[in-house]
Length: 199
Image (cartoon, rainbow, N blue to C red; front, side, top):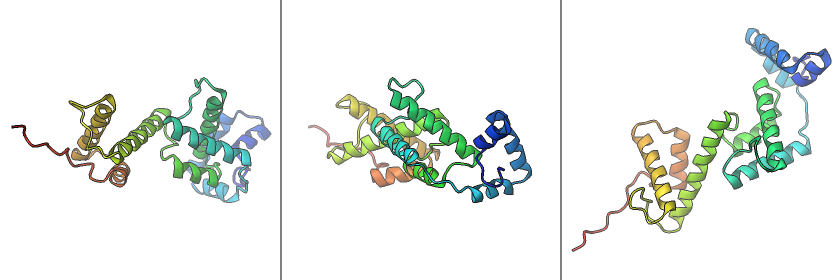
């Protein structure tokens, strides 16, 4: 059934076993026969439901607005339902049953969406700080300082930028992040211009 493209949730329901048990056996079968997953994906002929597309768009918009992924503890029902929807898409992706259109949409808008909540939250915060730094520089400001900053925003951005520079020097900065910095804030490796000494 799996080879013919039937989703694992439907197979579990038809056979009358818990989905977790079926997933375990599918993992074992796929490790013994790597072509199984490819055959399954080739035979999946599902259409993306309009509801799934709406939820994906709502999730992307919410993350861009708030700078964080939804949580099971969100105070509003919409946040909790988006959390459940995303977790189901992660499980489908791990099982190889996620619809291509959803996978490509999430990959394009939310790099790292497959990761653990902590990794995903860190990536969202990093992207938010990058956007704030780009806005700060677009306002005609010099590079932010972490010490002797004019305000809390400058101090926070200065500390974040200093950390990115340290990662670059130590060669621990992810290449995708380095590229994003180069694109959004060109010259980010330069130091602040020193003012002439007071006489």
